[in-house]
Length: 173
Image (cartoon, rainbow, N blue to C red):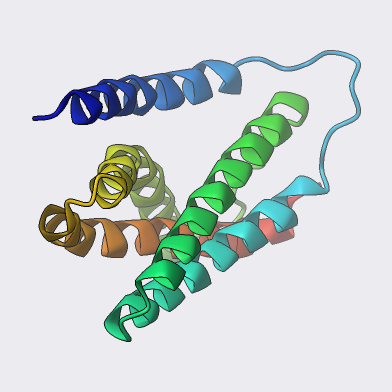
């Protein structure tokens, strides 16, 4: 393992732990005397949708032999996911959480989607970063191997983010 790869792996480990812990901690913090950022949920849901489109376009690009475009699309998807995270945290630090108001089977469907979305959004962090690192280091056989896992997980997280928003949006105050 190269020195550069060791640095990346150390960074990936730190980020993969710090982000979920920070998000969980910030969830409990409300900024006092600030206007709720209630306009953010449709924006960050749209960013999740854009991320899904970018991921699909990225796979199409690489299958068409367009490696540079593939890299650009994935870099943009990472930027979108980062923007989503910042907006999501900002919203929850300024606004009360919205409860899902559906009843019966739909409530169980909603919570299944929400819980799998949250759990996989934590799991996906190191996968995305390792996949990106392997491409940056030119280790394309290993990049391709992990990308086969990263892509469907990341796509699921992006799509279910939109689904969760659509399911809960009628209950926003």
